[in-house]
Each structure stands twice: as structure tokens, then as C-alpha cells.
Image (tube, rainbow, N blue to C red; front, side):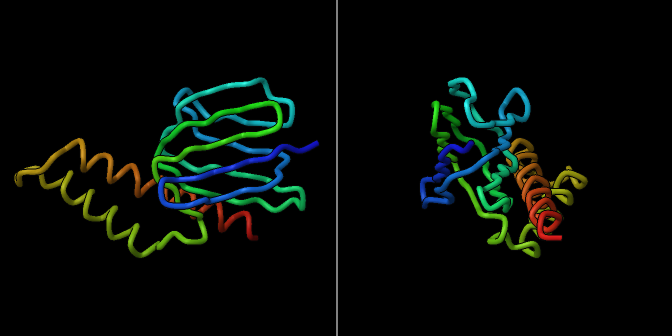
Length: 138
């Protein structure tokens, strides 16, 4: 059994296809979605969406929040921002993480703590998505 999945951000379509299983980072915890899942509408938090396609390939997409809607034969994700794991730039992510960690450690300079924490969380979640992508390729 399968269902259709559409994942889009404001910039582009990130995934469209038939899947057998989808895992998404809901605000109340991870959601595992199989064919026949009950209808649901929920917010997403920053994290990794994993999709298993009919040919048993696993795709990973980083999202920075959004909305997930489950219908009987269709799951739709409207992501605030989204990046396919294969498109993530590890060097840029590590540099952003280091900058945020440095700002958090050096609180003597003027900075926005909420924005810095959000940047750090984003970098950590992007690295987790990249790690899951690499592990699925092994």
C-alpha cells in the first residue's frame, strides 16, 4: 500500500511522489505515517522529514517548520523553508554553527539571544538531516 506525498516550500517543490512511509517532526513529537493514517492537520517543528518510496529508497528533507496535512491518500507538507539533504552544504552549516556557539559563549557583545539560539538549532538539525542522509546511503 502507498500514498502520495507532496513537500513544498515557498521557493520550490521538494518532493512529489508515491511513498510507503513518511516520518515528520511534529510539534508534539515525531509522526510516523503509513497508508491509511487518520486525517490530521498539525504544525511541524524544525527537523528532518524522511520518506520511503515504493522502490525502497529513503529521501531526507530538512524543514524549518511548517504545516503537515494528512488526507486518506495524500500527505502534504507546506514547509517554511526546506532543503533536500543532498543539497545541504556541510561547510556552511558548520561555519554557522560555530558562529552561533561563539556568540552564545561570548555574551559580552550585544546580540539577539533568540535569533542566535534559532540559528544554532537550525544548524544542528541540518547536520542531523545530513547525517541521516549519509547513513541511508551506506
